[in-house]
Image (cartoon, rainbow, N blue to C red):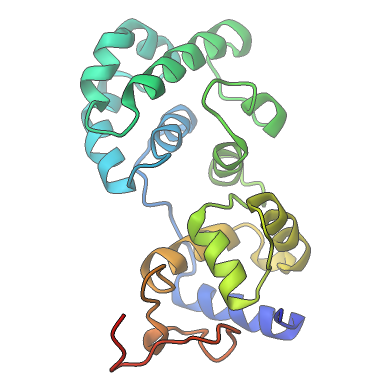
Length: 217
């Protein structure tokens, strides 16, 4: 069962009231460092990425500086992150393309972003949303879970959920919607034990197995 448009309006109104200007947990300083951070965050925690990039971004915050650092230098900085070997290769290849084809600038279209090594649809959508202020929906595991569990925008695949969200999210909430949903899924509507008791949209949610204070999972 899906939420009514009236309840969707209420859903996002409450999330906005709680957090008017949501921010990514990833730490970044410009479009390029965000692109690198999001690329590194695949199958890794934001906290782990931030720990690795704190020193990295002080010396390599542009594609040109990343190329100067080189593959081995990059690996030394990100070796605590899962799949770091492959990610390092993609980031160096990405830097070469940005320098050669885009004058060192991060492109502002999904098509161009997805041409870059290691950049999928979700990563492209995050960059477009945060840096270029486009109302995209970067559907990660948290958004996928929240959209299906609550009845907000059910779908069998991330792209299906993305399409559904783009249809039902009111325009006034479109810019920040993906951030609100990510944070809600990460801290409240958690995978193993959703914190339904403290959830500000629990009365709107269609999840049939809501948790209770004395319930143990």
